[in-house]
Amino acid sequence: MNILVCISQVPDTTTKVKFTDNNTRLDTTGIQWVINPWDELSLTRALELKDDASSGVAKVSVALVGPVSTEPTIRKALAIGADDAYRVDTEALDAYQVAAQLAEVVKAGSFDIILCGIESSDYNGSNVGGMLAEFLNYPSVSGISHLEVQDGQVQVNREIDGGREMLVLPTPFVGIVQKGIAREPRIAAMRGIMMARKKTIQLVDAARVEPLTRTLAYEPPQPRPACKFIDPDNPEQLIALLQNEAKVI
Amino acid sequence: MSVLVYTENWNGSFKKLSFELASYAARLAEMLNTNPIAVSIGQVGRDELEKLSKYGIKKTITIEHDGLTQFDTQTYTRVIADLANSQSAKAIVLSNNNTGKSLAPRLSVRLKAAVASGVGQLPEQLSPFVVKKRAFSGNAQAGLELKTEMKIITLAQNSFELVEKPVDMVIEKAEADLSGIIPKATVKDVEIQTGKLLLSDAEIVVSGGRGMKSPDNWAPIEELAGLLNGATACSRPVSDEGWRPHEEHTGQTGKIIAPNLYVAIGISGATQHLAGISASKYIVAINNDKDAPIFEAAQYGIVGDASRVLPRLVEALKKAKSA
Ligand SMILES: Cc1cc2nc3c(=O)[nH]c(=O)nc-3n(C[C@H](O)[C@H](O)[C@H](O)COP(=O)(O)OP(=O)(O)OC[C@H]3O[C@@H](n4cnc5c(N)ncnc54)[C@H](O)[C@@H]3O)c2cc1C
Ligand SMILES: Nc1ncnc2c1ncn2[C@@H]1O[C@H](COP(=O)(O)O)[C@@H](O)[C@H]1O
Image (cartoon, rainbow over all chains, first blue to last red; front, side, top):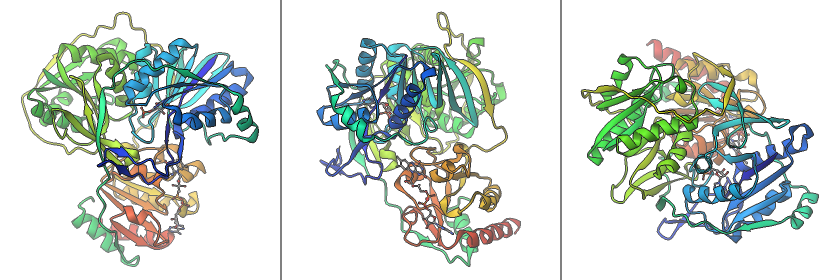
């Protein structure tokens, strides 16, 4: 059984985002790029399953749609333990265009489980996984918080309002993962970093697909008014403000 | 022509978010000069359906089918896509909850319709069609152009005001064509906590961080939440430590919420935490460090030791409520 983890690269989660060109583009100067946190966790879970001989998982691959500048991020995934990698050589323009590219990677390969994150922490699309599944006509399950594979049998937990659902799934399918899939992301050890140098990143030509959306401009959030400090010995004042000024209680 | 809105139900009932969706769809239909149509799947009583008309919905299409009792993304996608075609939808509106998030991207590919997810406002302009959506984990809004004829929008919960606009509504039953679809996932087990206010539905949220020091100190947080008819939440380290259940974790890697009031107690205000709560209308922070970054996000703050401030706040609130 083979797992493909789709990874996107995003600014480090502590980045103070700034925009340039009249707020039409992200200012990338000084940005540290990382693997999208969800994808790092998916990769971790996929590798945990591979480590467990009874799972039947033989190989873990990663795929990224992006230009050559994304290769350090892919190398990082290889250093963490992915067996091989695919890079579709094109700028990622929107979720539809990215999912269409990933669909070609999946069709050309042989994958049983395809994992995507619930959202990328930059554009917050929440769309690539579901779109990929529809392009492939595969089942998809959103909000996966646990993934178990035993002798090729797949069971997942899915978060639903106020609880969770345990599902048994046939392969192939697209799993869209969220919190819980793995606890801590696995980090690259020295040996992994050495080995990653020898692993191949397969270059895939981009399919011709037009994006369906375009970001015209960004707007930083409205600055909040300065905090009003309230004397800790006078909580009545806070209650009065919440009742009369904010009118929220 | 129409604006189609999928109004999910919970055991036959709607929630506030269903009416937010209805309000949004009605306003969007007005802008697009067309009619808002609600789609309801599963058994919902007439009285419940009628509630949608209060928010401007002129027609509701209900579909009941044995093959639809269990939510299956592929099946539901097909049913809603078929309706979007037969009703010549110009736009489809869904919630940005788990259901909407799983349906919107599949509908997008099936109908070749552009999606904007996590939208809180009506479009800024119609040609080109531009809507604002959440980006960079709440650190920015993106003005997104949807370039296709048909548009899909997922609406962020508690971000759009209910607009009461009673109209006459017709209810139509429709058949679903499920030929050739076999749901692929089988449900083995379901665990549901009933009777508990969901964090995503709560208008007031009281949340504790590592500054609470121990899981044994949560009683006043629960009491405060109870007094305010709110839900409880926590920061990530708190749920990682097992002090509180995982469902309570808010932030970039947890739940993203937008209550009317978020009370952060002993939470430093790391960017990853703020990513989940910055859309709250009001934030109150209680922290013993006056330089904690949470005070930059908060409108009201108390600098002090939570173990001292909280019990007093609870007492004061009890008094205010009985007054
Ligand atoms: C990729 C990534 C994703 C992450 N996602 C999330 C996420 O989704 N959600 C999240 O919350 N975090 C997330 N984090 C972690 C985040 O960076 C912070 O570490 C975390 O939010 C800190 O939690 P805290 O505020 O409870 O604890 P701390 O940072 O330890 O803060 C405790 C606060 O309590 C105050 N305090 C101490 N004693 C008292 C007292 N007696 N009375 C009052 N105040 C007191 C202190 O002054 C301090 O401000 C993520 C991190 C990474 C790297
Ligand atoms: N450029 C990309 N290359 C590969 N996978 C991606 C890319 N962008 C997004 N994804 C996948 O889609 C998920 C959700 O992203 P999004 O729909 O952009 O919020 C991510 O967690 C990745 O798994």
